[in-house]
Amino acid sequence: MHRIVAPVLLLLTGFGWSQAQQPERVENWKNDLKFFAASLRGSPIAGEKDLPGQKDFAKLYPHFDADLAALDADLPKLQNGAFA
Image 1 (cartoon, rainbow, N blue to C red):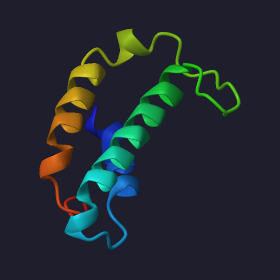
Image 2 (tube, rainbow, N blue to C red; image 1 turned 45 degrees about the vertical axis):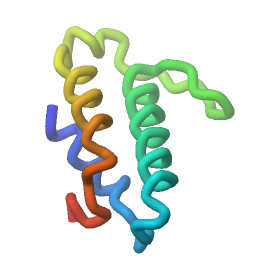
Image 3 (cartoon, helix red, strand yellow; image 1 turned 90 degrees about the vertical axis):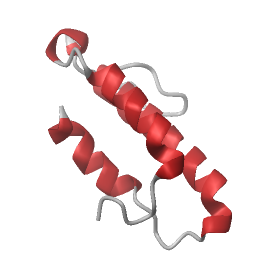
Image 4 (cartoon, rainbow, N blue to C red; image 1 turned 120 degrees about the horizontal axis):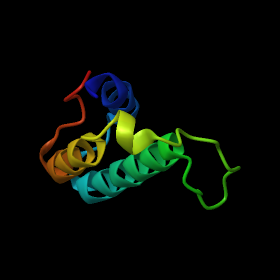
């Protein structure tokens, strides 16, 4: 599972945001995680072309939602370079 999430985390790390921008940064990360999950599952994404996704995603990655929820909960505590 971590092989899927780790590359995304690299994309989600900050680009020099200040601590004053943390709420916006966290909200952006949350939106990125939602987009990431929807694209893997093939769920419709507003304003984006429909992607096929993995139809049996839940079977293949049964802990994905729990891992994603744990990561989502930790986002406010993470520093910009936490995964660099």
